[in-house]
Amino acid sequence: MKWKAVPLGLTLGIIWGATVFLATIWIKLKGGGSTLIVLNQFYLGYSISYFPGSIIGLIWGFIDGFIGGILIAALYNFFSKAESPQ
Image (cartoon, rainbow, N blue to C red; front, side, top):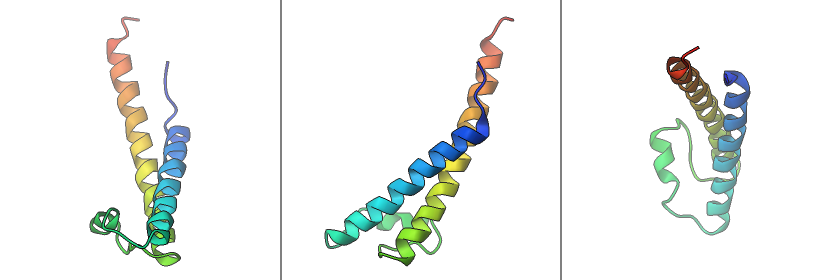
């Protein structure tokens, strides 16, 4: 079985982008915290704020998840082909 890279990338991109977006809003609603502030070291322009931070987190999260999904599919396809005796 072969995994399709783009659909997996889109799926993981949407999930991770939405997770970062919702977590940013949640942390901001709860009064702040240092839980997600680490992301600003990896995501350029990210901050814990309603509009700019959550949207930037959504965009970076999507890009991060998309690339991760493509890499996961590529690695799976590579190693599953290597195991197959066909």
